[in-house]
Structure formats: structure tokens, C-alpha cells
Amino acid sequence: MVGARAATLTSNVARLVLHEPPVDPAALLPAGFLERLDDRVADGEAETVVESFGREVLHMGDSQIEDDRSQPSCVSARDRSAHPPA
Image 1 (cartoon, rainbow, N blue to C red):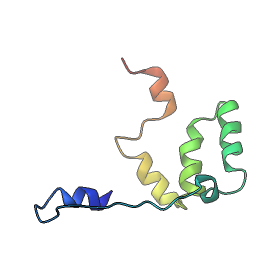
Image 2 (cartoon, rainbow, N blue to C red):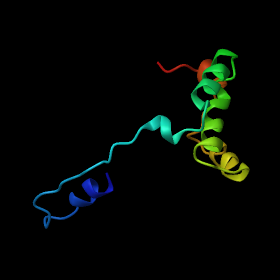
Image 3 (cartoon, rainbow, N blue to C red):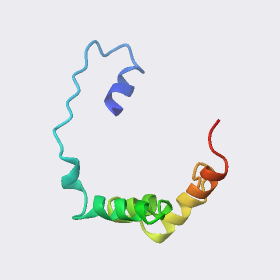
Image 4 (tube, one colour):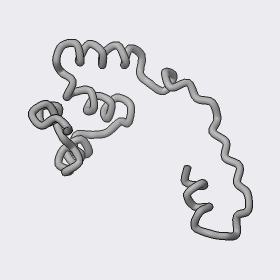
């Protein structure tokens, strides 16, 4: 998508062909990952799902997780349930 966006910034590109190789999303996830997420949601631990994705799929460390949590865009599941969108 970077190429598509960059092409809009110049008049020197008359045509652009984008190709995304086929990827099996399940092959990118650790074994049993989706089942663990389903179990967490079923156990009422939905808030841990995003952190698990960060740690297990994106290989984020503690400092990166804490940085993300400190961002204004990070709203906990508890906050969302207390203030549902209108």
C-alpha cells in the first residue's frame, strides 16, 4: 500500500501494478494461538487478547506493551463497556 500512496504524490506515474503474494494468515500465527484467544474471551479476559497478539505475533517486549498502553488511542475493554459508542 506504500507504493499506491506514493504514486498519488507525483504525476510521473501513469500506471501502477500492485501484487500481494498469497499468504495463509494461520501460518503466521503460533500453534494454538487462535484457540487461546477464544478461551481468553470466553473466560472474560478479552483485555488480554491485544497484549497476547503483541507478545506472541509481533514479538513486542514489556516496554513496547507499556508504551502502547500509555497512548491515548489505547482504550481498555473496561473503559469501552463503561462508555459505549453512541
